[in-house]
Amino acid sequence: MNIKVIAFDADDTLWVNEPFFQETEKKFYQLMEDYLPPHSIAKELFKIEIENLVLYGYGIKAYILSMIEAALHISENTISVEAISRIIEFGKEMLDKPIELLDGVEDTLKALHGRYKLVVATKGDLKDQHKKLHESGLGHYFHHIEVLSDKQKIDYQKMLKRLEVEPSEFFMIGNSLKSDVLPVLEIGGHACHIPFHTTWAHEQIDHTIEHPNFREVESISQILSLLS
Ligand SMILES: [Mg+2]
Image (cartoon, rainbow, N blue to C red; front, side, top):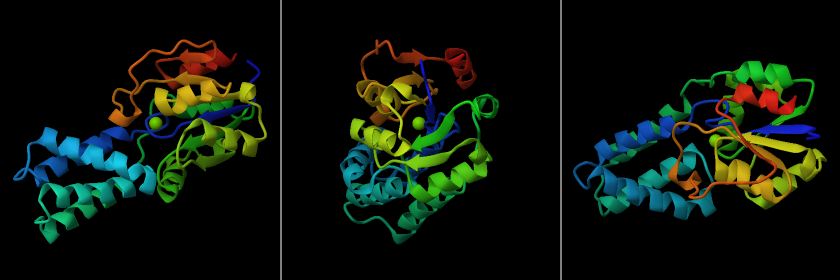
């Protein structure tokens, strides 16, 4: 591998994210328990979230708007103003969560810093992701952060153009096979999967990957041996 740029996914790669969504979703099930059982609420909310992706993109603000829409739909527009207000609070609580770095992240970045151009490549809300990177204390390891509206092949191709790097010189690291690995392999880049213990349904794929540019490790510090 002749790698020049290493891009790290942020959520559930550098810091904890998905468990906070799951925690909030449980509060939503409680809020809506008079209308439907949890699994039906989950199904309804997920459907609305996916439909709204094209309009809102990813992140907490989109999630909260979808939750309000689901509450209106599930209650047939009878949900109380107080309940809507609670949902807005759920979002603000999520946005205020302190950063929980994953094990080995800082030492790994420290070891790679200066040897490669390091960037963060993430989906989500622009403001929230910038804030999280700032609060993580990791900002100085990275050349910059790319907040992408999606992580399809075209988004990576545009990013590589901005970075002035060939796909063969690019290494993407993340917890989502669907977003962080597959599109990067398809454009000729290198990708490493670091599974997180829980993954949003939308990021799951139902097949295994075999590709010469694909790696999988259990923890972020193991990428150092892949690069040496
Ligand atoms: Mg992620």
